[in-house]
Image 1 (tube, one colour):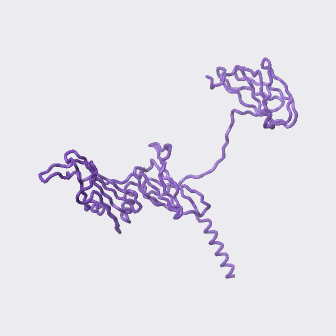
Image 2 (cartoon, rainbow, N blue to C red):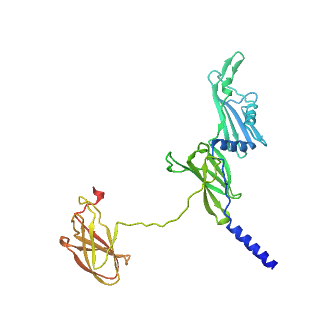
Image 3 (tube, rainbow, N blue to C red):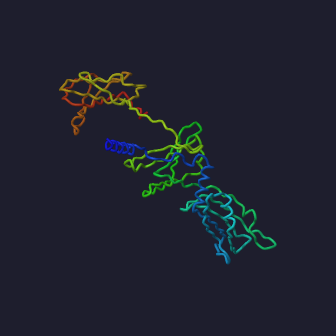
Length: 347
């Protein structure tokens, strides 16, 4: 009995493993610009780097010091003041030919451990003449550091991502905004580059991430995230249905009277539908067609579709009167020619 229970437990475990749905992130830092900024700060503090450079017209190398710095940033609790202090503590040198007219540019960038930009900023300026010589203006040293255009978010199993943008009435705009995703097949990790301008879009958009389920035959699953609050998964509505289409350009015909009556016509403009005539045995068929305005068919073409290489056969209908022909078994296409009916395409 104990052996049976052990086997049963193994079987139940196997069922549980095979029926488990593929894991996906329950929230992403996209619900607000503040949450995306928080994510970027944390990335910066774990092996990130801070760069700065000071360029001048002429691109002369400074005689003393350097016009560039690069410093690693690691912090158990990354914060704004640490980043700014690191940027401010690094000296930058410059060298110009004409201090009164040469333009200078001071820039900085904060990147993650893989070299993706997280924050950036800078200023452009002319040197200022002072009693102590040419100096960098104080206001040029003070500039804002802003969130980068796109921020990397690592998501296990993610291979594609897009943003569905909606107007004020909730209608989806097309096309979707496609996000770049760098997928590492070996580690099954996708680095999604979230466009910072769409973080916190609220009800005017949703983020759709496509996950590849390696454990389930490489099946793909789309998960929808809100662009508000905590960036949580949005509940979607699923269902199924069947179509009930119609082909008004084809009408069924039956023997012996393969008539098409009441062809819609207005000001003698309309379209003659194709007739579809099945015959189980050799039959005499009466052919006739007229429009709602009384225009008559004066000829008819017939094709035996059972023979793929067959050609159309033409029959005259003098004065629009019905004609009788004998046809072998098969499925026929019937095309009536109504000279008094003009095509809408020609009007």
